[in-house]
Amino acid sequence: MKIHFALVCLFLICTVITYAQDSRYSFKESYDLGSPAQVSVSCSDGDIEVVAFEGKKTDIFFIVEKYNKVLTISRQELEKEFIVEVVQTGNSLSIVVKQRNESASFNWKDRMEVSFRLQVPKETACDLRTSDGNISMKGLMRDQKLKTSDGNIEANTITGSLIASTSDGNINIQKIAGPVDLKTSDGNIRLDDIRGDARASTSDGNISVSKISGKIYLKTSDGDITFGDVSGSLTAATSDGNVNGNVVELKGELTIKTSDGNISVAIPGNLGLDLNIKGESLDVPLSNFTGQSDEKSIQGKSNGGGLAVNLTTSGNVKLSYR
Image (cartoon, rainbow, N blue to C red; front, side):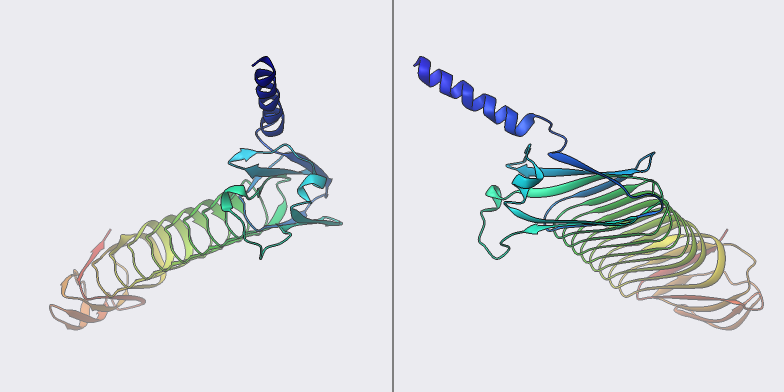
């Protein structure tokens, strides 16, 4: 009995050393890339997190998990299961991690997963790719590219352009000083405080945007579109959903279309507008109007014409002036 108890204790000690020596990461590598830097990371199965860091060094934390626990292993031990390619060329760093035998049949519970946490200088441009995992980023000052096949994407406080796509997941973007281009096949998209042109599309999900200044393009095949405090031009389309929101400054075309839903939009008053509005019922005040109008259609000029306003739906349309 004593021998058995001692073996159990030894097993527990070894388990603690293996899994819990440092639950935050498995091992770390540091690189002096200078500034501005370029970092690309590609992994087959895992999350990627990037945060801005004061300093010149780039720290890469490898997080290797099995049975939902972080393993304490070395790069050499990791390379027994994965191909790990790390290439530094001047200010550029490329990291690629992939299964050694991707065609082999694995029990998913027994598989290792490799995730990353990166601490990089603020002026770092990233190209991040994962096949099955989430991507998050905060505090960087250059152009960024993010792509995952199955996971969520979050980005906050970026100065530069942002391109982000996921096949199955939500996208949440905040405080971007630059143009954004977002795409998901199945998920919701939320944008807040964007100073630049914005494109966002999803095949099945809702789109919500606020405080955007620029040319705005929003599209979903099945979902609602809401927008608030936007400035610039706006094109929004959904096949099955409602569209509603307000424009604080209309600088270009306003085009909204839904095949099955209602439209409710508020725009600044006293603008010269070219109106093309169709719906089951219309609630549209007309000022200094010339053209043709009835219960289901309005075509003509308001206040002498100027900015194009195209609103089309099989449901109800409400246009109000602020």
